[in-house]
Image (cartoon, rainbow, N blue to C red; front, side, top):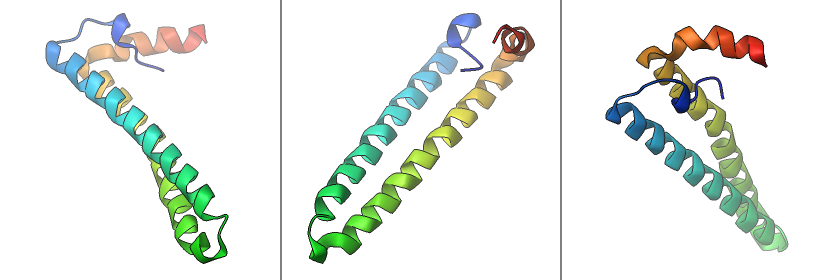
Length: 93
């Protein structure tokens, strides 16, 4: 992660937003995994293959949402004043 909350002093609102993003990120993980699991079971029956395929697609959309959400969070943290440390951390990697 480029912007870590332990690297900067944040307001209570910033920390709350960070926690909300983490919860949403975890919910997306569970939802996508659940859709893939149900889709896999549905795929075992020929009659359920089409709905199972749609669940795979929905799960894929959720998996694609994860990096988008992470980028939004990182940009919000940068806007909160953490951009000064970005260069130093980027060269450490």
